[in-house]
Length: 225
Ligand SMILES: O=C(O)CCC(=O)C(=O)O
Ligand SMILES: [Fe+2]
Image (cartoon, rainbow, N blue to C red; front, side):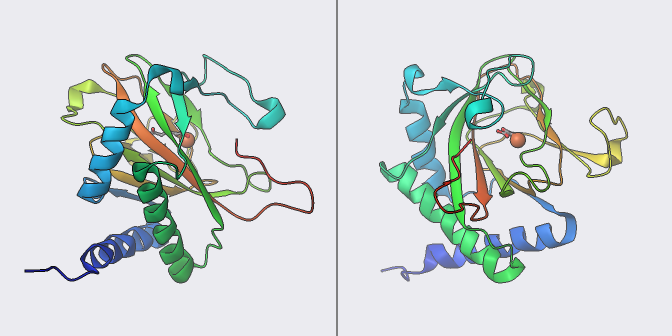
């Protein structure tokens, strides 16, 4: 028996619809174990095969202002290109999400950039925003997790704070905590939600990506940060 050709894309449509509805309602979306299985498997295999040298200490700030700051973030990253099967399938999937969101939310998303991230035991990323109003052109952040058998005791949660709250807020209903379990997809409006990664008790693997507006003007091509 042959399966219909569009079986994967129809699955994605349901998922993309729910992400899109979440963003309209709340500005963010958390979809546990939602990444298509085949894609998740390819990404897991690639991140396992990436050598330690391919991961570089992540910095803070953009281009000339890019500095390594142990106090803010300690993870190591590796940018994802379409040069491998895993990378190109991932980019294809992200671009179809982009198309779906543009069609339904009119966000005007133009391009996508993403990297693998490795947080070793104890690593963290302090509260930050991925974009600042009027400055950045990152519109929507996308994070997926590649950690099998993650237990709540392992820590490493992503904490997303409400737009109005400050990073020091301790009021529970103004923040949402996400366990970085395999296949969980998180999306949020980059300018609206301060967030942080708490230290984990074991290696933590993820992909962080950003959909951007077209901010390139004349010869000043906007570099990835
Ligand atoms: O890994 C995560 O949960 C979020 C990472 C993050 O906030 C970032 O890379 O900007
Ligand atoms: Fe972030």
